[in-house]
Length: 402
Image (cartoon, rainbow, N blue to C red; front, side, top):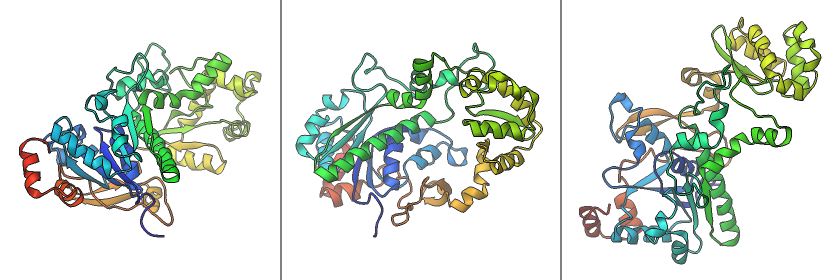
């Protein structure tokens, strides 16, 4: 077997910032030929978000953009012009998948919606990513990750170790919500793509970021529906891991099963508080987690987090030290996995990047391209792939189409 798992797949990306680009990055890392479309001059918004290499703002040195767009080729195109629409359709004719993140109805207004595009490419799988989906009272609302995260219910549960329900809720750190949505969009796209290669039929994949993040709180929703338990950001039960302070940082541990609970109690020396009859059943321990967790925290605070982690692991108790970015970079485990690989970017230079969270024996992940410079592959794609002349390319550039 040669090549990569998705080396047969051709993808066109018309996306901005994180969710859509992360979706297509997952496909590109598996070998798909992803062509990323950016606006002329400005490019993707991620190019203008830090951190920047050397702390100097520059559209080719954004760490966020560099990470999200590895293994892609990049072109510039303004699809709101008539010439741009024509070029876009020429690109669509040659691909299997289109991933776009315009507001609901925006592509249809440009006469580039799925119903129009499938006429020129019946095999097309088109994935549209929107904040709230394409129907419902919120469908035309604009939103950032902050809005979507709280609309999905996650913020009500954070911070997990809060003692005060009146304390303000928090958003998940970094770009976590956008990446979750991108992962789910990639899953839906791959499912439709499998069907494409089995049946020869394309289809439309509609992804709501709100729906995607709702799947992250299904346990809380189910517990309320079935048991009337309303989970909040008050102290969470030991059944769900909460950060506990050690001498040199934090550790998270849980006792989800009866066996784990008994092992935790034994590891702590069978303290008298654990004999409370109220803690003898799983559901009670869940409801009374606010009473259990402080006892465990009192025990944990005298330990070094790594020492405690290894001792708990030896007892088959679920636990993990809370790692900083430096901890991860210095981790012998990550080094053994070869998780970070060095890439050389013509403007940003050589830096280490995360690779893939899996190893595929016959079609492994590999570096093919660093993130593209703005419009780097215009000539290769427009002239060599679509057959445009260089003179026409100059005309497109002069008229602001590319």
